[in-house]
Image (tube, rainbow, N blue to C red; front, side, top):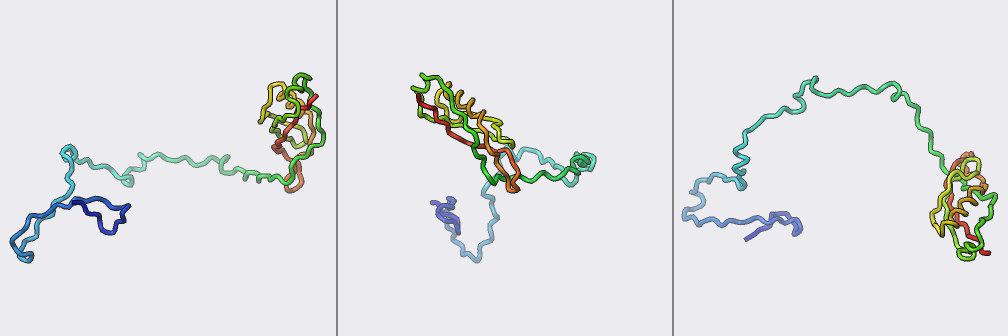
Length: 176
């Protein structure tokens, strides 16, 4: 027979075996209290282990503790980091350069897009460019060559100063 612990919900119920007691013929008031018997006994292997006292951390001598070195003057007197500049105005394309591909590639892949991710420098030039949506190796190469010759108005921060910024664009391969 199993009984759930008091106060436990059905999801928290823990099964506890109930051991029936043998009937006693003496009345309850005349019985002597029985000694308490522990329900869980240590294993014989655990009981055979000798007790070893250990030192608490507060009793360690100061010589045994590792000491922290004080911070060097160079790390204490560091200037505060520069505030993060937030983008207020996105870059704008000023000069677009046509994509040049061979005629057989233009016939096969014409009017199809190549996705690019570029980083626009503070002066409006393309600092980095990579293909993020490829079409074919020749088309990707032609789109990268063209976008590196593009000119942009640089992105600006809240104070109106030019800043480096990422830019995503899609170039369409011309059909011939």
